[in-house]
Length: 396
Image 1 (tube, rainbow, N blue to C red):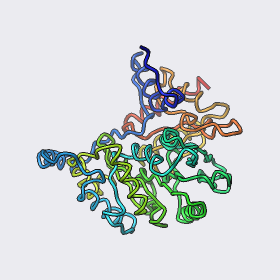
Image 2 (image 1 turned 135 degrees about the horizontal axis):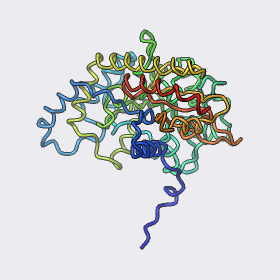
Image 3 (image 1 turned 60 degrees about the vertical axis):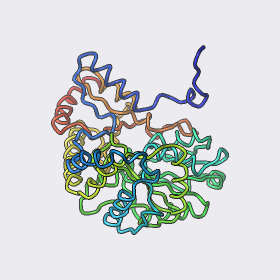
Image 4 (image 1 turned 90 degrees about the horizontal axis):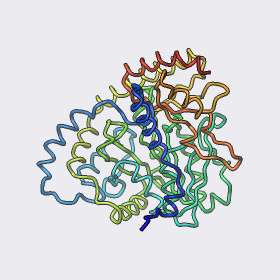
């Protein structure tokens, strides 16, 4: 018997970051010492306070059984406390917070809670693949809104067709933006909420990168600063606290939306282990490791972007996030630039922008002329990468 994939699974292209992993393995097999800027996974260690608490919590919860679907109360309390300290927004931990198994499962599954097959989900382009993949698996329609230099990588709500807006149930936003590194202000969020309120759309705000910013005196705001009604913000410990493998995050905002999301979770998963939540609480209480991460990431940004500038590439240094959304050299697409960087003489892995973007109706792709560098290698590795980039001229 031949096992066949479902129609929806077989219709999908290879997941962008799976392709990056394959490129890394191919180079390594050829004996190349790879410097990998492909996937946004910190190489900095998880903070000690989280690891030490995890060790004691494993014994503490050795007979705890299944965790609560919505998250342990002690975790939800601390998530609400952190939001109040960070954004000045007061939330009820019982009504306005639910834990998640990191951000990816929450983002991917959200359309199952709020959208039907005849509905639309509006997605920024480029953007995190689960925004549109989750909608497709839920059977909903997807409308992509292109982010470009012309609109300062902010969603232009006037470009969304009226017939799409009338049938939309979710609008995805992500600021600080992945992959462009742009920050949104209160005026933008107000326009977004006005648009959503007018068309009865839930504003889903992915804020996984809220703590990686480079103007240290002016941290980005949250969509929750504009309203806690009709807004569902998605937070994660992965990027803030180098806890990608722990799979812990939370959603916060509109009480009815959170309640609906909790109902969804009871049918899909069994929650994050209590001992992981206990470790996450200690990480949330500690800001020192976050400041150190921010300072190190800024140094990485400066080293890499200065090297690009010296090579004559456009200065694309981000305001925030873990990524540099770099324009390819003139005359090259992002994919062509990526292929040059994979030459054994350079051995640098990054992600072509087109892999994070979708073709528009016009046939163009807003990521076509870009590449994404995740600022995850060590400072020493980035310095080595800048040295190798001197070989770039012979391939241009």
